[in-house]
Length: 191
Ligand SMILES: CC(C)(COP(=O)(O)OP(=O)(O)OC[C@H]1O[C@@H](n2cnc3c(N)ncnc32)[C@H](O)[C@@H]1OP(=O)(O)O)[C@@H](O)C(=O)NCCC(=O)NCCS
Image (cartoon, rainbow, N blue to C red; front, side):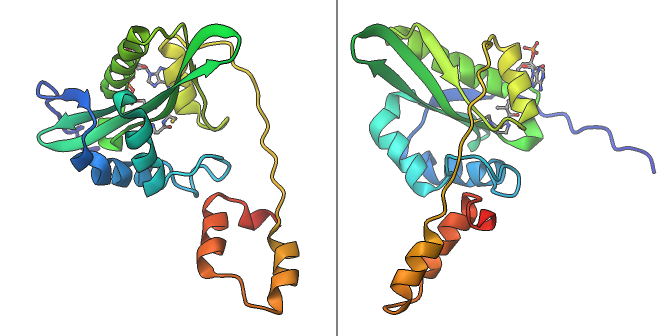
């Protein structure tokens, strides 16, 4: 079968702008497609509604959306880190996502550039980013965009569910909600 030519997408109307309250649901839905437990079972940060709302509430000035034809096609959520007795201000790119259909078309780069500019305005001297060690595409993207000095970091887990269950069993069974939360973060499978 003949391969279909890739659909041309006109990005001339693409706008990178500050995230607004009305964008929360669209940003959350896009993130749900990108940061799935199946794809990144070891991603220690959890993508959920509270994550998006929390960033918007506490770090609204570091939350950006990419909009095309009235639809959200990307987002960048960041924050600033300061340390006691350290004059350096760090800009942390916590979540960056682009609609898969638009991958490789410069949207991520523009979001990152916008966040970088606002970090600079806030006195940031160094940017940080992290992702799953198997997320080669994102690592390639960050390298291409000037990030280096990769440092390995290991996350360990300790499952407290079994112990808790034994104690709690006589009172009540564990709730569905708590189990699904553990499953989502990839912990439940590692008993
Ligand atoms: C990673 C991600 C944000 C990149 O966004 P994108 O819009 O696809 O990337 P861009 O098209 O803006 O790429 C910008 C530049 O990086 C380059 N690049 C992108 N991915 C690359 C890769 N894997 N290796 C090398 N270079 C890469 C592009 O060629 C482009 O170079 P240019 O400036 O010379 O043209 C996006 O693919 C995504 O949403 N991934 C899933 C979510 C995720 O993993 N987020 C990161 C962790 S929070």
